[in-house]
Structure formats: structure tokens, C-alpha cells
Image 1 (cartoon, helix red, strand yellow):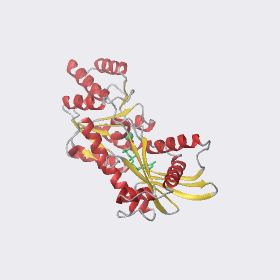
Image 2 (cartoon, helix red, strand yellow):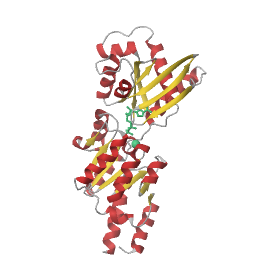
Image 3 (tube, protein in one colour):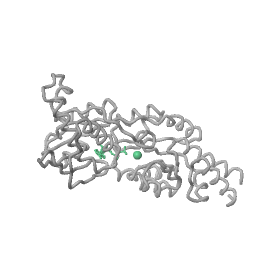
Image 4 (cartoon, helix red, strand yellow):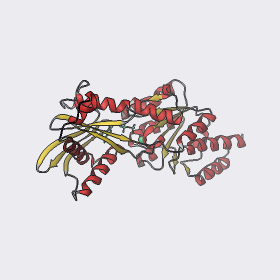
Length: 324
Ligand code: ADP
Ligand code: MG
């Protein structure tokens, strides 16, 4: 490949909103046969919206079909309110959905979110913070039930009511987290995220280029398979419930099976996997995503449209063909 031809390729790509770090990157894309797609923010919009809030008596009704007690609304409001205060320090799409919903409710009563201190974020697991609940200090945790159980939260075991409701919500294809305060799991929050309108077409284009697509996510399997089904990725190619530090290993495993991997992602959690993919294949970041992901990648898809990944590969192959 002559430097000039590669420069022409990168120039054309730039016009299409595909920023390539250096012309030499186009050469490595020719060999790519596998494409690993992060779910949230890459295949989906990444703008989650709150669905249901299930608080104890509501949880009971959800699980056993009993009538909800009075006071349910208060408990649901408290669950949302405390969860939002704890999530205020997080940028995660789940956190944003919870905070937005609570703020919308608070605006109606002219209140502001409860102040929180000692916030900690646990990537791929959840958040914790100490919330000032009208003068009462409460330690609030929001996240995966398995992580809450690890933290010593009561009522977070797999047979407990709250966790059964969580599982039920996940089986419906929602993303669900548990909220705990004062040492006990008390409610379930569900969020939903729409698939980008261009993602299904992008999968068709990638397959036409001979690439095998995989969906990779920390989210639960049912939610991941629902998204995979909507865009046409085989259920056997869904890699779900992957902790952030394991995303890198997924790419390495594919590489050790001889695959040349392109990875597309947008999150802080994706950065190590994007860099790993770039060593022998390609790392592509959504321009709408985090700076960390963009820095770790060879290519930035400025508009966050997954079809641009197929275009990038097509341009590189075209460029290389012309100059052979
Ligand atoms: P993805 O791969 O879809 O970006 P993450 O690795 O960020 O997913 O998160 C995986 C799971 O960890 C979430 O589905 C949720 O259960 C939990 N989690 C992560 N961050 C948070 C948060 N800020 N609040 C609550 N739960 C969280
Ligand atoms: Mg993401």
C-alpha cells in the first residue's frame, strides 16, 4: 500500500465521519473476520429510561400475586428517591435513568435530590453512598444482587423476595438493579434502552463483508438476547454478564482461537478490550462515547452510527485493492 493511497482512504473516511488515527491502520482492517459489539451505547442508544419501581409490598405482589398493601407508593417513592441520591455521582446509563426519573418527581413537589456523601462506584456491579434522608443518615447501595450479597446486605440471596422479583424483571428482558438501605435489599428498579434504528442494518452490512458479529455486555442474558434478536445477532454469539475486567479476556480468547477481531465500544469499561483488539485487528469507538474509549481506539465513528463500522472496513478494503 502506498502512503498516498492510504491517505486518500483516510481522507474519504473523514468526510463520512470516520476518524482514523493513522493511514497505516487501514492495512490491518483487511484481515478482520470477527466483530465484537458492546451493547449499551453501541448497539443501543445508551439512554436508559426508568420502567418500574418495585418496593417491598409491591415486590410481594409481583412475586406471589397478592394484593399490594397500602403504603406501597411511599415505599416505591423512597426506593427511587434514595437510589437516585446514591446514583447522582455516577455517569452510568442506569444511574442517569434513575436520577432523571427522581428529579422529574421531585420537581413536581419543588424538592431537590437528597445530598449524598462517601460515594463509591464499583464498575459492572453498582454504587454505594451515604444519603441524608431528611435528617436520617442511610447507607444506600444500588446494583447487582450478587454484589449486594457480597457487601453483606440482608435479603439479597437468590431465594429472597427482592431478588426473585429482580430475576422476574430480567426474564422479561429488562435491565434491573436492586436498591438496599439500612443493610437490607428493599426494592427493584427496571430500566429500558432502545436499539438504535440503524443497528440492524449495520449487522447485515457487517455480515455481507464476511464478519461474524458478537454482542458483549455486562447486562443480564435475557436483556442481551432481546437486543441480539432485534438486530439479528445469533443467540449463540451473545456474551452476557461479563464483568468489565473480563471484556479484555473475551477479545483475547477470540484472538487465541485465530480470529482477527474488531471491537466497537463506547464505555470506560470497553477501553482495555478496544486496545487489545487494535493490536492485531481494530478498535473502534463511538464518537458519542467516553474519551477513554476514543483514546484506546484506532478509529472513531463520530456519529455513533454502527453502519460506519462497515463503511470503515469497506473503505480500507477498497483502498488496499486499488493499490495492489
Ligand atoms: P454494559 O456492558 O452493558 O455497559 P456494565 O458493565 O456497565 O454494563 O454494567 C453491568 C451491570 O452492573 C449492570 O447491568 C448493573 O446490574 C450493574 N451496574 C453497573 N453500574 C451500575 C450503576 N451505576 N448502578 C447500578 N447498577 C450498576
Ligand atoms: Mg457501552
